[in-house]
Length: 463
Image (cartoon, rainbow, N blue to C red):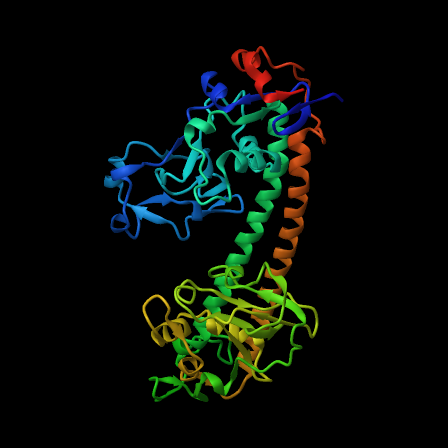
């Protein structure tokens, strides 16, 4: 197999290497566009609760566009903007300050989405010449990203690559059949990862719903397996109102240890969890580092990490620790409060309690301190009051359900990590042609497909 040198490394001789601008000239791509600059750019006061998504660089992570925390503008305001209207099938790439985050706009419930000036969209006009999914993965190719970082001055205080410079970026263009085969392999891995993430999200939501049903709404199964409250269950008066017969009102510290003591060796290396390692509204810690022990929170498997500072607490940064080795200790940010149940109560119960709206609203209400640096204290959590059964059987039963859910979440995450590793090792090999995929016969030379591009491709091929 013969290769040629290009600005993005070696590629097979029968693959084209052309610029974005040439693909635009050939009608393969529409001219890339970013969001609106200047006075018509939406301001903070323009954002509304629902409407047209206004996508920023922060909404693009790990190759995925998320609408979970994006801002919205009204459709009326969107109609007054001149550009930056992205739609399904577009490839997004960030080009200012945060450089090189990439995502494919998938099917979504919105008419269209708006982009900030930080984000460019690429729209394929001729799908017989260029596959949009292939383009997305090419933008994630490490050799392309290195060039993008170099041209944008990434790492400087003003890293930026505008549309004019983006038109000069080199694009590898294999035969379309090979593009489609490459993208189908990588996209298939990503689809499985997203399916795992969806299952994990559903597991958490279902378990939270069970917690609320049993311990907030008092619709736990009675002796016949029917919902207790709806089927005439007995109640007694309490300071919290009516609670099931045989239940009592407790303080949090009656059944949960808050920041339990851990003996750890000074200056020894332990797994360390930063605040940024916790994902909003996600049960598990997916990333950590090893770091020499200093001041911070201390934990082991089965503990719950609760962010105590604004806005992390409000955003739902709460995690169940399950990534350590048996009997291993870890430590983390001073802005975590560590929760652990006393013996007899499943550790998983503390996690789903901490994720409940009942607990979260109490914690948020009890935050103190100056604006922007408010925190909830240990004492602020200790006075949380909840009704629980004297007989722990119901709590243990819930613990079994929660444990199964969390174990399946971990299994899904472990599988997703393996799939990501496979994808990340395959991507550069597929993009460079080191690994070739079997496809039907195709023309070995594409110059007739992209005549102008073929004429000027020499500037992107090195000798």
